[in-house]
Image 1 (cartoon, rainbow, N blue to C red):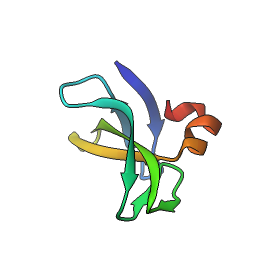
Image 2: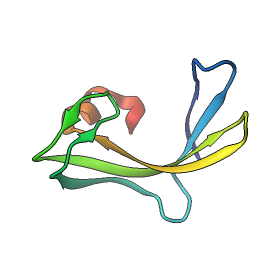
Image 3: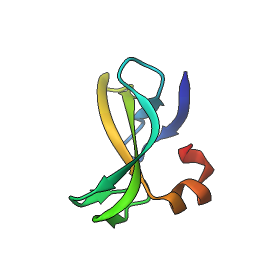
Amino acid sequence: MVLEMSLTTQGSMMERKIADFDGCHDWKEIFAVLPKITVTGKKVWFTSCYKRRVMIVLEKPYDVQVVNEYATSLDLLCYSSFK
């Protein structure tokens, strides 16, 4: 259920990314017309990229957000933690 856990640099806030809930999906190929920021921080537009929807749970203060993440095919090949 929990894909990855990471300790953020904002104090002692823990963050969990959950990818198996209603409305989430694995990486899907899309065409980015408007600029999108990938998981590595690059901006891409007018090109094909991949998109997934994940739920981020912040521990302190408790907050749940559903966000879209974008990645290029090179990001998915080089960085196994995004899979």
